[in-house]
Length: 296
Image (cartoon, rainbow, N blue to C red; front, side):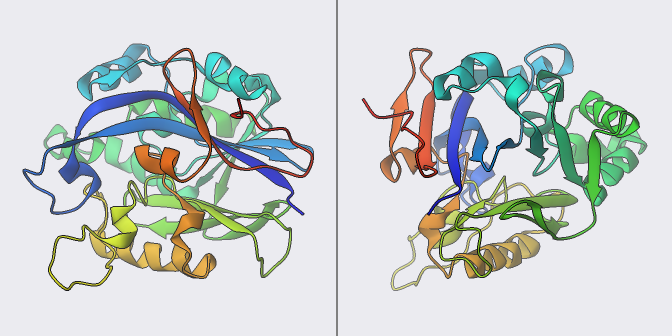
């Protein structure tokens, strides 16, 4: 039995991203492709998402251009490939408030948004600091934070303090404070609806960028697999490593069940296809009775 279908939907990408950004310590080791994606979860009479991408206009476009993002497409175009419209989405889990994850809330008019309270309140604090401290805001659009506050005003934002079980049936939220960002979180889908579950998927947000964050770079002679955190941490790499251990515990150390949405090579692990827009749809699992959206 599987309650939910899960797809990773690429909406743009950076063709050449410094490897040191995705893997701590990988200086002068070249570049990797960095897909920009969100996750769609469908089942139990819900359509939910983990993150919402960004809108390629105003300061979001400035940041996209700064990071050399290519081939951006709107959610209506991207999600049509799996037969879902943005208006169908009722729940959005925001893993963190960087522009490419929290910058497109306006595209989902019927959704309620969940974010860690620490995440949004600390970005408000960071926005108030002198300009000389602006490094902390390197990947944040202040307009996104303001739009988040407007969601709160309109009773469409739920600020979460710590872990929250069964926010939707079988879906749990878990905090990773002071790691990649102030209040990052990951989403666990217990796809059999059980606790403990034998069919758990962890949607890692930016706590895991690439497979090597879990397995290590593999470049040390005789070295066993070792967690190697992402390069960008507003908090600390130590907290990223500790969060990785907690995610691994949830899947009984089966790293196949931790989904890094910025990892180009998930195409080699899960069924996928390239759309006519040159973007990839990856199918992580299917709910009972759900037809494949990537099969030929």
